[in-house]
Amino acid sequence: MDYSQIKSYFMTKEGVTLEHPYGELTDVFKVNGNKFGMLTSDKDIVNVFVKCNPDEALALRDIYHSIVPGYQIDQKHWNTLIIDGRLPDELIRQQIDGSYSLLTEKAIVLQHA
Image (cartoon, rainbow, N blue to C red; front, side, top):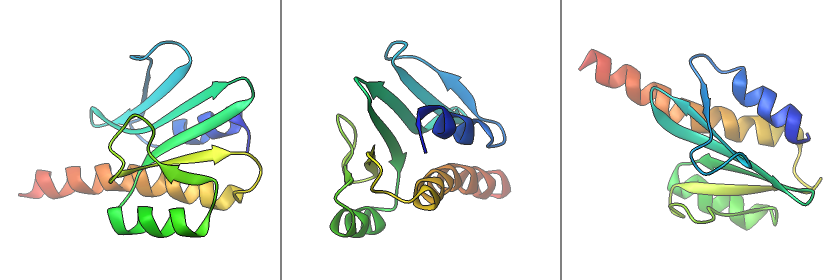
């Protein structure tokens, strides 16, 4: 996946908004007013930032060299996916889906409380 494909995939999620609070070079994706993903590109280096269950975050970092702790963000709950051709497209989509689900499932629980 490349930058535009990843951005398009984020935007397929229901209720997603795109903001640029850190400048035009950083896409911030929100759902229910909360950030669930970011996408940056600088000199052909594309990074995707996604929320993640802390245990899963650690496991993924152990398995994939292109998944590292969140950069300048909560490293316990966020991973950075370095898009360098080593991560399968399906894994990238799954990580975006999982990040989105963390916030949308939480909102559903709060609505029913």
